[in-house]
Image (tube, rainbow, N blue to C red):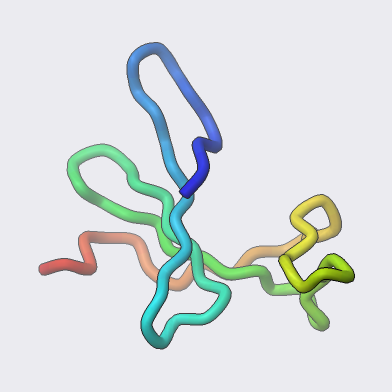
Length: 70
């Protein structure tokens, strides 16, 4: 998990979704709502060692906005 933005006392985190959702990420928003997204570039730009190269990602696909724990 990594902090992507800090505004005042509020922090937003990106977390990697696991267990059947490869390369999907979630940002926690206000009130328990999450924004789930994945890179939409084809092919997904990767580093030589295998991780996603976010500096080269130019598109993301929004998968879900809501509380996926409900």
